[in-house]
Image 1 (tube, rainbow, N blue to C red):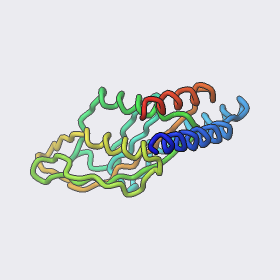
Image 2 (cartoon, helix red, strand yellow):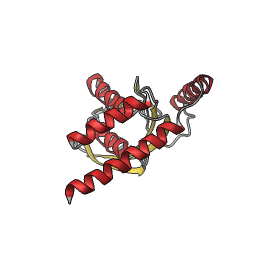
Image 3 (spheres, rainbow, N blue to C red):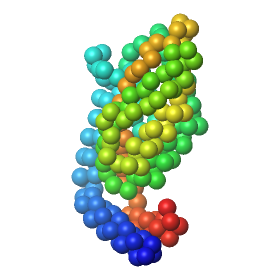
Image 4 (cartoon, helix red, strand yellow):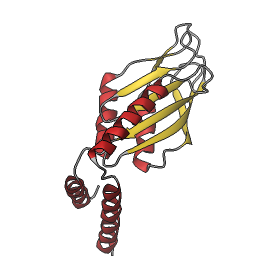
Length: 185
């Protein structure tokens, strides 16, 4: 019974992947236009106006991980973590099988005495299960410094922009998916 369910899920998954990958096939000029548009939007995302509600903005692509602090620079600072950033980039690269841009907003609560993360809640999910789980993992590794020695703010939002870019051919994607299904992942 389990093997029948697995086969049905595998066929469904491969059908969806084939459908999505066929939709994303465009002429070279169309890909250049998409890349230029995405690059322009990335720059706009990283330069928000001063009225933005979130404390941090994070841009994640298969090639880069950028964090911009929008306010409260004098009271809270994120501790850089290049190793963790590279890990997140690698995980996003594995998911880059279609051309897609998604946004997510996550709220963070800190313990008022230690400044460690108390809880996180997705306020606006990306609706990609794997990416939403990855965003939670990303935030859990963050650490903060409080220059004034007072934990402030204790609650804030982080806005994410995730850019997936199809780099593999349809055949490579299908082969990778088949291997993952054989492994049971």
